[in-house]
Image (tube, rainbow, N blue to C red):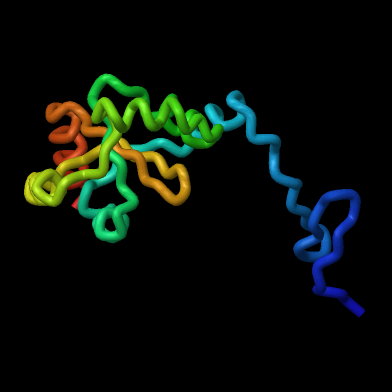
Amino acid sequence: MENNKTDNIDNKEVVKKGTTKEPPRERNEKTLREEFEKDRGIIEWESLSKFFASGLVILLSDDMDIVEVAVSIGLDKSEQVAEWMDKNRLQKISDDKARKLYDEKAFIEALVVAPWVLVKEIPEKFGKQKKNKKHEKS
């Protein structure tokens, strides 16, 4: 008889017969950086509207590295994050800015650091290239 309930064996969770889920990796700077590098991406602003409406979108200044900011947040470097916020290098997006990005059908760089979504504007030239490729596929 097959047993489908979850059992714990040597810190591995048996999900289904024959499959295992590894325990979470240690969250240090190196592993966070690797994870965030893999997870960063380019997305159309419109796709983030529900996160913006919830107040969860944070805009980075142009000179900031999105992965570096994500690592600092992930490691709870609250003094560094507070300094960036005090200098307006990290800030919530204003309604006017969000409307402008929406109207322009802008593409942005985005990275989730739960519960936040970090975003950074990308050069207009790159954004237009992404838009054209999207239309070519249609």
